[in-house]
Image 1 (cartoon, rainbow, N blue to C red):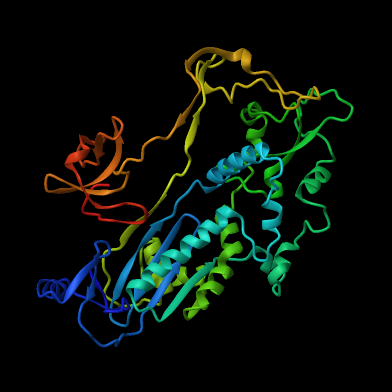
Image 2 (image 1 turned 45 degrees about the vertical axis):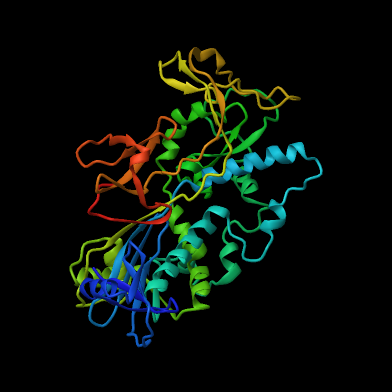
Length: 449
């Protein structure tokens, strides 16, 4: 492993060996900046001579592969596991905002105004884009990168149909001419409920456009994942019925959608401060197979950076950890035993089926299947923020451990143990925090985590 070096003015220099770093630290000519990746700062004037370094980025929806290569060796490489669950958190935030706006009648919704801005991205997609940019900036902060090469995609579906497509033309596909996607689905399904066993006898039933595969499970908003159902058939129960056959026909392209949405946006932003080049997945695959390398994100990034015969090092493992949870309260739903299959269900799942107050368009009343209440519903107010959090690196009895969690109101800490899977519980006052595991957490592979 290399030790990364900064000069007096925090500008990155070429990395050095651990031996030279120890000599500089013992002589007082340098100080430690961070533990992982190990970085030092020189305390005396020095030159700024550097070499050409190419940073290869294997962009992705769930993972980022990276590799920085010079003429002689690979200086750093690894894989970043990005944070998931952003759509669910955004929906929860929207729920809280709707509640606040309901109590303040003069407050106008800002969503429609914000989405009309030029270059607007959905919050979950923007989070992925920002994560890529922040991580690349972290690498350029410790290495004097001269060029960045980004793999933008394997293919472009619309470009196959129209080789000259660009810009806003991506938004003018086959569905242009319909008022919106919902109108297209209703027209396609002939304004009829698609449930073959529909028992709705209304002359003009209320129709819904329904996701076959739930959005929270990666279901896209493409037409082949949408179906027209009436208000009585639009129930969770049908997901275990006739919709199962539809679900098998759907293939998610959530990661490809991300790439097609932000790939050039990422390139445009990075071009403001760096020399940027692009490549494609089929070129990376050909090069990786020619060098007989295993299929990993780090190896793909090495090929993207035009790596050939350079000396390589063990890749880093980085996990993106949520920094803060600012919710002051959390609602825990009541749980009941379902009389049909004796399973444990929440009160939301076994609900009354009522959807409106002024019309009798209710779905099936599932309250009759509630058998025994196991836990009550409650609203928990967060009163304390414990200093030790999951993925923090701590020192306990001279050994380093990663934290799994806390219990007993923060009085005890659960440490990750290589032998005991459930971890070991210790007094929180006896552990010393070495590094907080927030944001991009560089994992020390020599320590169980």
